[in-house]
Length: 75
Image (cartoon, rainbow, N blue to C red):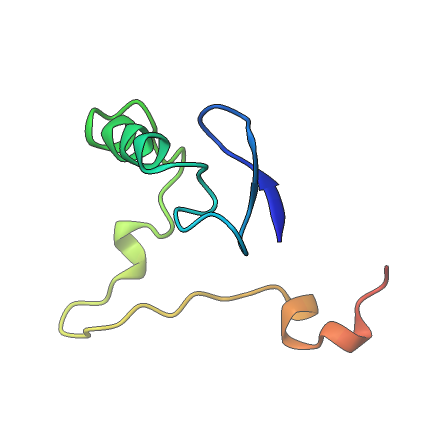
């Protein structure tokens, strides 16, 4: 699979680069550093605190109907 490195935009190939989708270990470590320094953030939470019921250990995410029946989706 071909892709561009998210850090330096160099073309990468999953069959060639061990650090895919990054082109090198250096770019992979820069990306990790960006997450660690909070340069990247998730814009919205996946769930609200109200979605968590006390005493239950799991969260159920409701997916779109199209994802449940991919053959029924219009393209």
